[in-house]
Length: 228
Image (cartoon, rainbow, N blue to C red; front, side):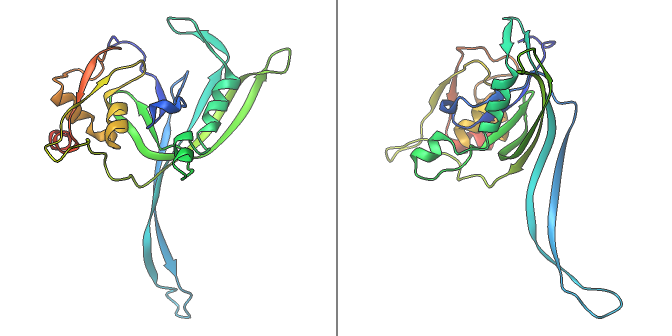
C-alpha cells in the first residue's frame, strides 16, 4: 500500500473466522468519544443541596455516522451493496457463532481500526440505527447512513502461547487482505495497542507496508508487551 493510498476505516472482530468485519466505503467525517462517571445524590433539606457520592466509572463510548452508497469503486471495481453492508453491521449486535459454540452467547468484541493504530478497541456495538435515504426504481435502498455507538468492554486475560512446561515459543501468522499490525495484535493478544511490540520484534519500520502473504512471528505476550 502506498503512502498516498486511502486508508479505510472499519470494524474488525477478534475472531477471523467470523467473517463479520465491516470496512467502510467512506471514512467518517468525525467521531466522538464519551467518558462518564456516576454519582449518587441523596436528597437533603439543607440549603446547599445534597452531597454527592462517587459510585463508579461507566464504560467509554464512541459514536459516529457512517455513509453507505450503492456504487462500484476501488481498484477492482468491487460492488458496494447498501443492503448487504447495512445488514452486516447490524449483525454485529448479535451473538457471534464462536460465543454460541462455547455456550456463552454474546456479540463479538470489536476494534475500530483506522490507520496504523487502533482508535477504539475491546468494545461491543451497543446500538446501530440505519436511515435509508435514496432508492432505485424497484424500491431497493441505494444510500444509507448508519449511526453507531460502540461501548468499551473489560478485556479478558491476555492470551498466552501454549507451553509444555518450558518457555513459551513463537507462533506464526500469515498476513491476509485487510490485516494490520493492530488487528493482528487485537486477535492474538486481545490488545491492539501491542502492535508496536509486534512491529519491533518483526523488524517492521513501516506499519503500513504489510504485504498479503507476508509471514510474521507471534512471540509470547510478555515479550510483545515489554517492547510496546
